Length: 97
Image (cartoon, rainbow, N blue to C red; front, side):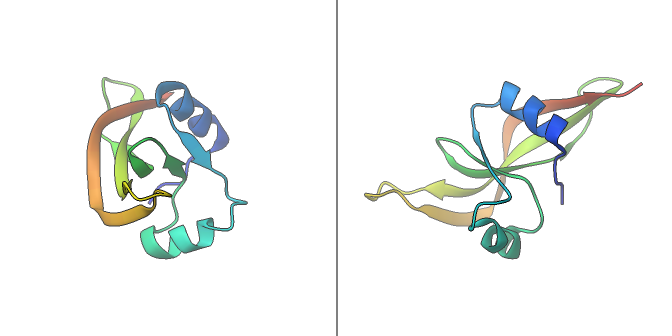
């Protein structure tokens, strides 16, 4: 499980067109019950988290965007949970050293 600090959230949003689900949102406790204690993001595809990833190169802490739920075509759209699906998007979170 990975909660992002505020600096990592800013870096994630600078590299990834998504919206942060703030901890103050009433849905967050339900999301934590379902998926664990993470920082949650919404994008055009659905609900996502960032998990630790192998470093891109020496000295770079990276995270991979993982989709947890996708939007339906219903009106209004709804999120449908599914098995976590790692995406191809890797975020550079921090340069180490």
